[in-house]
Image 1 (cartoon, rainbow, N blue to C red):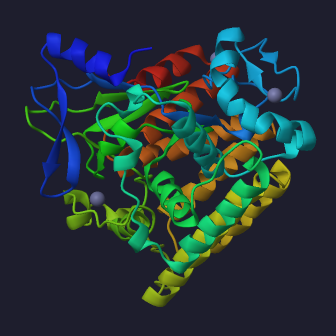
Image 2: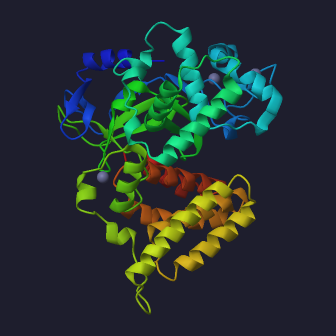
Image 3: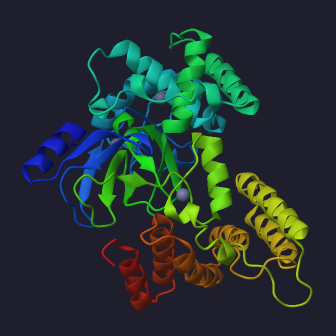
Length: 421
Ligand SMILES: [Zn+2]
Ligand SMILES: [Zn+2]
Ligand SMILES: [Zn+2]
């Protein structure tokens, strides 16, 4: 696997180079020193540490996070699976922390991924003396913690995480003092990457310290994608020499008000991109029903709050409720939304996306495809160009069309999902 250093070296030979700088707008960041064309691979990063999502345990390798058939199991816990001895060996330092707990609790053991990442970081810091290739441009020690920005709830959550860490890992991990632990959790919270597959299904989480230098803009010019644990940063626009590489940290479906609130909450800054400054597409994203009596501002705000709470409830219910029950929850929510929102409102779309997932679980492919085709029409106008969410939905649609033996439609959808389209 290429390290960041290897790639920087290779790219510099061909004339492309990425380097760290300090910008007025974002603080420390990464820029390209030469012009870059759209689609160009700019960086490849291996993780400092990674964890496989518990939901993926039966189908993916615990070390490289790649889905494969015929994985071999850890002979002790019978839970962790591997491509082969190479992956199993390189995962042992991390897996030995969890193997005994997996033996005791089995598949029901699903601690927060943040806790598992912190346990791995502490172990790695104790056992390896060399700087990890993933820290080539930026080290774990240099990551921002935003400790002083944490609110009471966030501090309480970290407190809970520390208790979980002590409960399950104290046999194998030496813990630093509480203050240091809080700082490490805070760092991981705002700098770790969620690893998702091409359909944006959650696969795991990892830390790429050098890639944490990439700053956010809703008007992004680069995207990060994953192959197993390998992260790739591609330019999605032509870039000038000296231009900062910017990615999005959040789902850009929502209005500027929602995005700004989310970024403040999770990453402690206010986005000043041109889409946020001009409230680009906010009215379209929050479209209100036109027929009959027009809802008041108070009713709209109430419906937004209701929708946000309902969406959270539906997402959490995914692991405990049947798809039929989820579908019913989506339908009830949409009926209520229709009294205020028009079709194409982003909250409505989010619920429709959840309903599509429920139809998929039920094996009702046709219904899922119909919802997908309706969603993609709205996604294409509401998301900024080159959003991975749009590409991921095209891939989902393509798979459904393939399953329904519509090969021409499927090929077209896969083509639309590609960056070159
Ligand atoms: Zn593997
Ligand atoms: Zn094991
Ligand atoms: Zn923005």
